[in-house]
Image 1 (cartoon, rainbow, N blue to C red):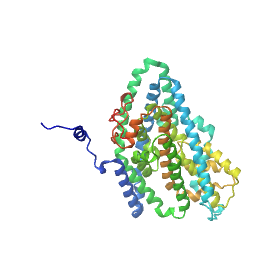
Image 2: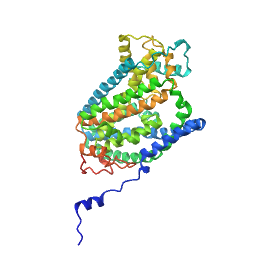
Image 3: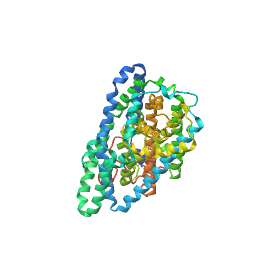
Length: 458
């Protein structure tokens, strides 16, 4: 009789490795390369492909509001007490404030050391651009009081109709807290919402099949419209911004990850498909539902994911903050405008507020820059015309940095709250338990397709 060793059994039971070309990250990478080629060699065709990218982003935005609402409501209701909600929210905002401010300071320091705009000697009087005027007008309309008032929706349903993330967040938190007060009688409703959540996340996995098409169209448009050559004249600014963002992610966020027992590079590898999607579409929102899926699949508790990720998309914009101080000082240097230390600190203080005030607004990076410059009159707002042509290329880096920053924040706050299964987390980062395109939000918060009893390889 033939004997089977434990090794034989494990080998037989091991899942067959999927071909590389079936992975979403490979498909998106190929789509970006094809889009860049078409945009470069056939610019008009590339521009005409814009609806593919716009259509995909609209599909994702369509699903963001219900994803946030269902995740937060079921997560808060599952906590069972207001103490847990307050603890997560307080720790999340402490993290956001610390690292958003640090990102602004990093941008300010690098701009002073590298001085990417030095020697351009541009006369502000020669600068005028209707697009800059439009952004400046939007910035003028965006005030701190207006931002706070805008969090409150006109009606319960208007937040979902308009797709305002902060308004949906506000309603979801209130509703989740209300279900805690209702108590046992609310359990059937919570169970129903968890069933709806499972269906919604299955829809997300279906929509993600179209990600390569969206990335292809968006990248073809970007290269076709602006051209790779358009960044050559402003290569110093673009290169400095990319290098600074990489420095922030690898050194600062990397140190935070190391202090919490994991590698920033492993996390980036785990989220590579989403990062390529963000690169292709220049929008971190396009990967928001997928980020929430993967964070829960990696062992983070649903209640923490539901609170940290959506609020982080509005209050934890590391890439946007680096961009604001770096771009502001670049404009000052390019127009030979001297800024004293006091003026630079004022610029930093205003940027801390304006980066929150334009959250969720289309073109937020450019709008917040206009709002910040308007407070320091010596820096000409018209100088924004200098960087308008390459802003699209920097938008991609802003979005990627914001995305990574929010992924790190979710894990760190989960660790602080002791709401993460580190065995599951390490296994996920090693590439073992997650099956792509499968919904990971299941009934009662258990990730589908994930063997929670599976031991980590570490």
